[in-house]
Length: 332
Ligand code: TRP
Image (cartoon, rainbow, N blue to C red; front, side):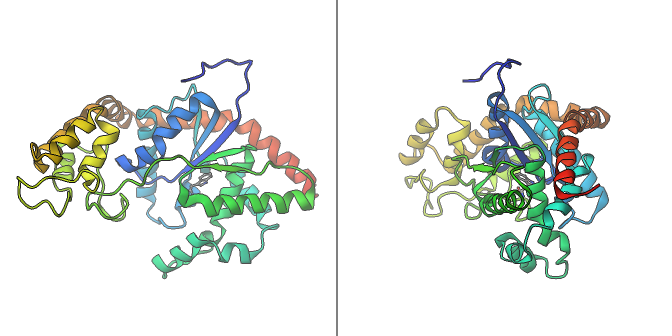
């Protein structure tokens, strides 16, 4: 059910940040974006493409610029409605870095050093352990508290970051008086989407994705190369939909997935049939977003205008927070 926009009803505010990882794959949609689209009807939603955060791992200016545009166009194509929610780019509201600095002064280094993502990044990019990696969660806390958001829809992988945000808020409030609400993570019950290898989580860095906005022949290659039930050797062997990733992906895209599973179990259908059908269903599901994405990518200035509007709309909120915080901290 969706609640119609009614200016007399104030809805709780949610905030979420999205990495500018370029055009998303179906794992991004099923895991997060779909949920963002739904939540914009129920909450006052603010969504931010976190390009400052991206700079901690991505040092290719052209790529960052392109991927930010692609992510924005994709979010709009998939249903984020600028009339319903606010979509903006983090660096367009430079208050975020200022607030991050101020929050750093209440954050012990030891909290940051023990953050799991920091340890992972240190291992995965040992030649680039830049300071931004350590400070990353403080900037994330600043994103959230800038708008005093109480709820943060994120994947389970963000649980430690959210816990840290809460600790930073408590530290700030204890020292300078009650200022920010402690943000609460809302984890959606979306199962982990496995990649085309059928083993690891779908991820761009692994290269096991099914890309929503890729040309049809690329999508066909990605889906037809998927690993299925590895114990099903002969076409006449019965399939096991529970362990077959192709069957599992029919669940979100095929209303009749149970019938499809039955076909596999009885070996009436083979893996190739089921893959072809998945391709057809995914193309059907994303037909409109794919067309809209192409239009948006043809008009980058139009996308930039929407992003600029978003950043402008929340300017008063950001400025009010900064005024309050500067005052409380004793800055003249
Ligand atoms: N760290 C988050 C991620 O990697 C992105 C993010 C940045 C974020 N700022 C945020 C998420 C604020 C929620 C709230 O996905």
